[in-house]
Image (tube, rainbow over all chains, first blue to last red):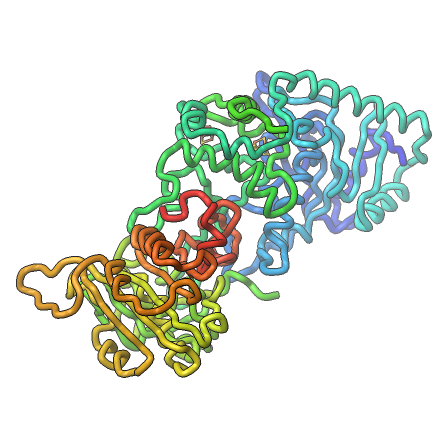
Length: 344
Length: 273
Ligand code: SF4
Ligand code: SF4
């Protein structure tokens, strides 16, 4: 189906009204208030704000709405907020698929994550632009969502083509069609969108040509210590890269028990921090920075792959964007891969 | 829905000072915590923090639990201040157990040192429950000095079983202390082994360095990779394969372990760190 962009925004504004839909909050990307920065942040919608659904991924990863930086797990009692997130990108939805496997599985269900997952509706949007660090195509991704959304929007001029990804999405689309004028998507529109998508893919290939490395990631493991040492020389071990990564979910459980009630608070943790895996007595499996640095790469490309059957890197480029030391994640993967010949 | 972060309150009913650095808390949880020997629990000191510990009591008792703890860091510092009557919290049990069925009819060797004796005591007491099932049990226990030896009171009892051989060794005997058992690293006791290494299981637990050399020695004596059971104690924060602190290559020490065979993990990196 096709809807005018203007009408879609009117629909979102209506969604802020409890008598129209039971959403408590609509969240979508807003441009940075600093005009020098071309950046977007997920922001709660107001009647007067300006938003951009069609550029590239936000600075903040989608995971913060589900795996919050800090949240009380015990006693469990999560706010009953129904959220509509608009403008989620393909990379972040792939990341959410990794987190889903980690946080909701047969042995374990994280009460916070599953609460937020169930109370959130997601509308994805195609990327019409790419950030300088974007490299989803290097990790098998696309600049549009293929799964994991309730609805997806592809922009063409002043129109959105809406596609449905779930029953929840279908209901929302029905509500949209009841209140606004919508037409079925014609073949011309479909092929124009395909063309636009291929053009973005071409831009991504072009931008990342120098970082191509094939997909034999076992080379990361076999490459020598001296190479990792060299790549990590400027890393200060701040952990920014892991906190902002949409698939990192290492956690730490803090005890905040007062009086007779046990209180457990879950916070994000980072394998880049020195105290991370240290056991009582001071032993640590990765006392050196280069070991922790290497661990992150192995985790993304090998450990998560063996645990979940998919890569832990979506190519969103946030770790590169945020790194204090200016380390380019793609460059490291490429450099390390080049130190080891591929055995064919 | 069950909250995996749930904590079961427990009351300390006795504290045994085993050695200057090691003590055993005897606790009574509000409701029984059935576990299998080898598994671990998370112990919360209210308002301070929590840490993974392996019960040191038999798994045939679930209404009470002994937890033997060495003073090494922040949380354990508080453990060493705990008094009978204090409340603590327990989560678990988590992880894998010792495969008792594989020990039946065998000549089992248990090799341990220092605080590694805690899970081994649990295993040992569980084995004693139906001791006739096992052909023999050889327990080699190590400590730094005679005063570091733990479970002192129980040793005489344990030595009464006719298919149990319990030997102890200390690294050094400082002036002024008396000791009339073996002296040397616990692995030197292996010279006294009188069972067939090729067809029998061995269980190892202790400080990382002892586990490393213990395992290497067992291999030298002819033990098979797949018959050596190791209790790998990593930073098992959450207990259910979630927080990733205890990841060893492709394994989680908390979920795939803490009990591993050497065959399972010998190719992983830095297992002895
Ligand atoms: S953000 Fe950069 S400096 Fe900080 S830990 Fe990650 S790689 Fe190192
Ligand atoms: S490793 Fe970097 S590029 Fe890959 S998903 Fe995480 S933040 Fe994005």
